Amino acid sequence: MVDKEADATKDWFNELRKEDVDRINSVFAELVLLYHLRTVYGRERVSLNARVGEKDFDLRLTTDEEDVWIEVTKPDFADSLSDGFGWGLPKTTQNSIDRKLKSKFEEARDRAPEDAILILGIYCEEQINQSFAMGQWLDEEYYDVGEICDGWLSYTHLVDTQIGYQSFTDGGERCRSLFDRMVEE
Image 1 (cartoon, rainbow, N blue to C red):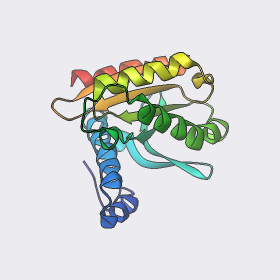
Image 2 (image 1 turned 90 degrees about the vertical axis):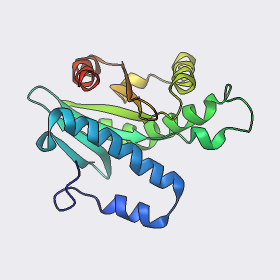
Image 3 (image 1 turned 60 degrees about the vertical axis):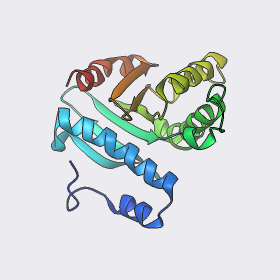
Image 4 (image 1 turned 120 degrees about the vertical axis):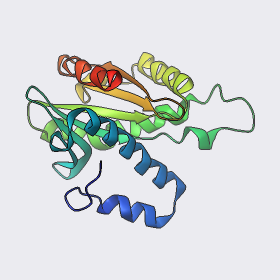
């Protein structure tokens, strides 16, 4: 799925060379989503490192109808687990999402093409707990997520691939069928 000649892979190779497990896992999270998107939509419709002002988004999916920009995050959920049971650690996931939205999406919303749909891709190590944490974070209503992000795609690939999607805007809702197609295939 990766063409090292045509795809912008320099950042990935630099991260892998550092031998930092967290960074390697982040590269893995991007690769998993890239694989699923390119399996369904093909290499020509899914590009890496789409530039928005001073920032870039990890992936960009262009279809005849939509221009979808996806920034990937992998909350360090497993690293935060104690030796005990894993319930009650929502802050790791919530903080990771909040940091990513503020660092990438606020500026991107102002600078992205008008028709761009901005999606946060969240790689979940533990889908049930992390989905619960994401729901709690949204319920707190710290700010209107829909003002800067059109939706988020949660996914995992630990046993079986699981993909979930939540939209926050009309544009984000139009993407639902794009991500549903990934689940079907």
